[in-house]
Length: 594
Image (tube, rainbow, N blue to C red; front, side):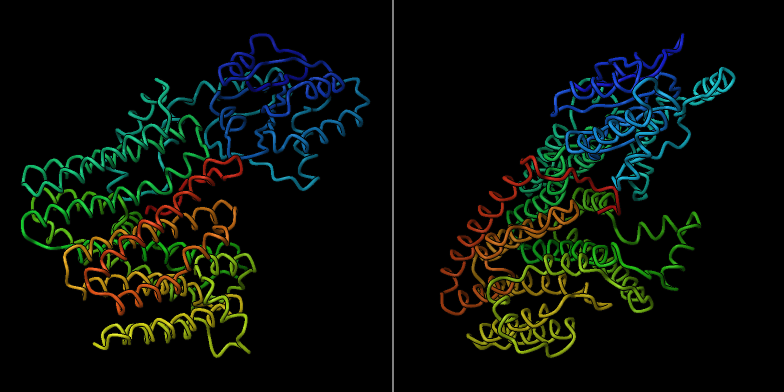
């Protein structure tokens, strides 16, 4: 139960107490600063507490945004301030200061706003939500109160709340074909007590059933799979809209939201590959290639954003042109569609599944994603080359964490007398040697190539990654590792090798996605013990090349399967342990559509 301390003289006809109780607050009234401080001290330390001016006039949703969002320790709107347990100490200090300043005899000039001023003076991060057309004010006289009440009556609180449930930036398909009705489904679910996590789980189950339908290999199964995949995407939109509509953000929801989209899509790829195999067409290499391409696209996005997250002097002519294009209506939608975000991508996959074959579906998907990756990466390279950004230590550490160097590369970095060149050039050279060795036709050549690659990985991270193009190092490492597994599995030419490779890459990709969302939540990277246990990208690459050289094709398939299971168990154990812990961040993706 949350507690709201209402300060000042009650106003006849005010609905503030009713509004606060509807938001789940137990309302208590204080007549002076001393009583407010006493009531605050009486609230249990593990509960949310708010201080609200009794003269407050505004929409209930303005109060909801200001007082109930679980993502922020401290938050405020005009006339109201709140603190979660983690922000309680700062709020208590501010109230004590105001009590001392006013000698405890009266509450002058809006205690809530003065507390916010004191928190700002202390350097506390107080979240102030964007209210838009919503009203939140403390009128100073009856005339101002009447004007505020008229402003409240002029804006439909529920319509604003429903509109804000939809992402402010989304793809064309999602914006025009899903969100116009999914927001009403979200409201229906929220009013019946359904949580975002429940809907997220339902979306996952629907996608898995779709994958199972695709795995039947029949035309009817493909049609059902396409329909269910689209329905799964609708539910995927609904879960986030419930979270925004009801402000039901949670650490568990962050983990589910961060991982289930990828799990659904990649499970569907596997279902298509199984269905094709039933019809005598082996498309596992295409399925694995699609997963690799999509994962590397995401790593490019993550690396670029992290590299420029807090960079100074972060402007360029290319960025200015991009912003200008984003100000023109039709170019906005064209550019968003070109990058093939999740809505367009899943709609395309669903239609192609129902109307064509898995092979055609993968061909179109690979071509579309390759074009999108080329477009976005080229634009970001141009931005990086034309800007003079100064990247911070935090950005460099984030890129190092995304690189996922293991014990072998770390040893190389420690014992190296110095760096032999720019990080990206070193990484490119090591990757090129590895690629040549994979196609050399010599049994043990890939092992030597992987060793050179490991040395290059250590050299690339010898110093902080602060160069203009150093954000390309993590996606380059992802492509090198994943493609090594794909190529060696394909060269084995035995049944089961490519499905085993698919499982291994899926497990490793999950680890990399998990790392990304930890960094986004400012929780740091995965623990060092986990990175050591699963070898880092260079260790896994070297191990796979050794297994391919030392074992027969059948034995290699078994080894890949065992490695996939081992990696999956370790990363899932640590991921689940972290994301259900009290210290996990409530991260929800409100940025670019994936």
